Length: 424
Image (tube, rainbow, N blue to C red; front, side):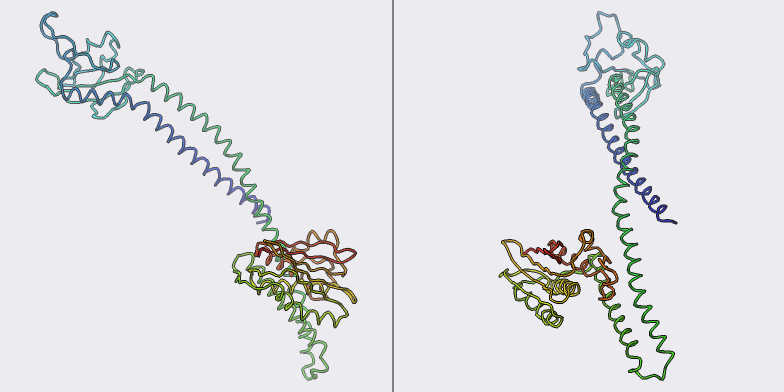
């Protein structure tokens, strides 16, 4: 599978995951809103039904709902229910509606032919396919009057219409949200893939460069050893140059492997800093002292100006490695009579370390890539001096891990300045 196909496949996977997540969140959110709205709309009618049911269980059926016996003038006065929306139906043991004639004034004959649906909790029923009622049934507390079951009804056409309109609105919004989720998922998947693609490219570049850097010394070592095998009886002195070159390439290979391991651990955040407080100026002077002798042997000059006069909390080993990298570069890229200046200063919160030289300098393009891995301004010169372009990448990691900053700039009239700021 090619790189582009793999990236597109991973982007599609992210888009699907995002879309499913958005859809589930909106669906659950919509169901919660719909159920809460339905519960709120029916809460008043349900409370009225329960209240009237309790009243009937306590006081009996209202007199107007009992079978009417005798002349009209001898009938007892009506005891109307407290809520005019409540309709009372009475049923016999044979599930026959007893008071159908009492409903004609308000609902007409819509209850004619309906069947009893017993339920002790409020339940939705539809009558004649168009009228919605909330219904609850209870046994008659006074069965001697011929009524077996009492059914309480509340018309909920208004509530049902509100729910229907809200459900329609939710469906329309859901369809719209699906398209918005697709667009958002696509955008998010592209944004998610950007750092992955960038890391992928850096990894590919890193592997290619590392393979190239490792292959060169290995090839040299292999060729020299094979050459030595062709003359097994020769003396070491006769093959001194071949052995020295092999040893030099072995050292370079060992250093390259160490640098690669350091960067790999830095990328995985495996390396932990061991911080401690120490005086900065004596530490700088101690690290620079052997390099001053080395520079003097090459007719170069190293000057140290320590003006920080403060303590710093940092990893001494890593800062030592940082200074070694910078001093080694400064000596490599300077010629005879050139000078190198190491200067420290401090303010209330941070210390500043500057290493400047009057060497060959670096181009404008080089300043943009100087801390990139395997970047070398002059590859031929770097290979001759044993550099692989990893030192400044390690230096940047050391400074960043200490929550500091490192910058490179041109030195006037020539050379390079590396400026580092670290918290105390």
